[in-house]
Amino acid sequence: MTEHSETIAQLRDTVKRVCDDHPGEYWRAKDRDRAYPSEFVQALTDLGLLAALVPEEYGGSGLPLALGAEILKAVHEFGGNAGACHAQMYTMGTVLRHGSEAQKDQYLPGIATGALRLQAFGVTEPTAGTDTTNISTFAERKGDHYVVNGQKVWTSRAEHSDLMLLLARTTPKDQVKKRSEGLSVFLIDMREAKGHGMTIKPIRTMINHSTTEVFFDNLKIPASSLIGDEGQGLRYILSGMNAERILVASECIGDARWFIKKARDYACERKVFGRPIGQNQGIQFPIARAYAEMEAANLVTERAAELYDHSKPCGTQANIAKLLASEASWHAADTCMQTFGGFAVAEEYDIERKFRETRLYQIAPISTNLILSYVGEHELGMPRSY
Ligand SMILES: Cc1cc2nc3c(=O)[nH]c(=O)nc-3n(C[C@H](O)[C@H](O)[C@H](O)COP(=O)(O)OP(=O)(O)OC[C@H]3O[C@@H](n4cnc5c(N)ncnc54)[C@H](O)[C@@H]3O)c2cc1C
Image 1 (cartoon, rainbow, N blue to C red):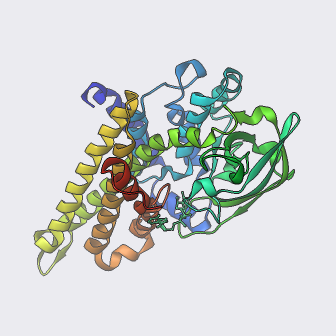
Image 2 (cartoon, rainbow, N blue to C red):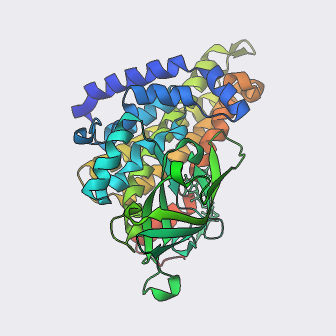
Image 3 (cartoon, rainbow, N blue to C red):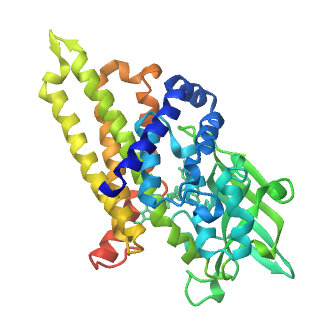
C-alpha cells in the first residue's frame, strides 16, 4: 500500500471533511426518520468519490479497488455510513466487465457523474435465500423484449436508484444441465419500470438501510437490457462479488476503528473509583484485543484488494476478509458498548446506532456460515455442505 500512501492520505482527508460536515446528529435524525442521507450521498458524488472505480475514459477516476476500499473505510471510520451509496461504486463493475460497448457508452458516463444512479441490485428472493440458483423470478423472451415476473427481497436503495441490476431465470431449472445455467443479468431502467409492472415496497428494519421488496408483474423490458450472454448471468454476478466483499470488509474495518477510538478515548477520560476506567485491564484488554483483530482483518483485506487489482484469484482472501472484518467490527462494537456502560445506550453517543448498523455485516451481503463453507470446500477440499 505504500505506493498509494499519498493518495490514501488525500482521500482520507477529503472523506473526513465530508463526514465532519455530516456529524452524529445528522445520522441520528436520518436514523430516527428512516430517511435517506441524500445530502451526504450528494457530497460524496460531487467530489467524484463514488466514481472512483469507473475508468477515466468514462469520466471516473479509474482508481484500483484498494483505493475505493480506502474511501469506504474512511467513511465508516469518520462516523458516516456508506451503506446508502456504496453500491454506486461497484455495481457498475458488471456492466463494465460484461456489458456491450453500446451499454458502457450509454450508462457509465452518467454513473460517473452521478446523474444516473445504479445502486439497486436484485438477486435475493424470499424463498431461495442464499441458494441463488433456486431463484424463480423469470424473464421470458418475446420478440424484441423480455417479460419479467417474480419477486425480490432486500433490494436495498431501490427507491433511490435509476437503474437496477437484476438476476432472473431465462431458462427453467428443469431444462438446464446445471442449475447455475439459465440465469441472466439485466440492467433495468427503473424510471420507466416503476408503475408499469415494477412495484417497490420498503421494509422497515432495525437499521436505516433503505431496503425494499420489489415485485415484477409482467414488466416489459427491451431485449437490449440483457447484459452479456443469456444464461451466463450467475457467472457475471459472482465475478462482482469479490469486489463487494472486499469493499464491505473495508467498511467493517472503518467501523471497528470508530468503535476502538471512541472506547479508547472514553476509557482514558472516564474516572470511576478515582482512576480512569482504562487503567483496569478488564476494560483495557478487550479494547487492545479489538485493535489486534481489526489490524489483522485489515491486512487480509488489503491483501485481497491487491490480488484483485492484479487480476489474480482472490475468492478465498475476499471471503476471509469479509469474515474477519465483520467479526472485528462486531467485537469492537460490543467492547465499545461495555466500555461506555450505561451511556452506550443513549442515542446521543451514536454507539447504539453504529452497533445496530455493524451487526448487519455478518449477515449481508453474505452470511458467515456461507463464507466458512466456501473456505471449507474451496480452500480445504472438504465436502460441499449444500
Ligand atoms: C439490510 C439488508 C440489505 C440487503 N441488501 C441486498 C441487496 O441490495 N440485494 C440483494 O440481492 N440482497 C440483499 N440482501 C440479502 C442478503 O444478501 C441475504 O440476506 C444474505 O445473503 C443471507 O441470505 P438470507 O437472508 O436469505 O438467509 P438464508 O439463506 O435464509 O440463511 C439463513 C441462515 O442460515 C444459514 N445457512 C443457510 N444455508 C446454510 C448452509 N448450507 N450451511 C450453513 N448455514 C446455512 C445462513 O448462513 C444464515 O445464517 C440484504 C440483506 C439485508 C438484511
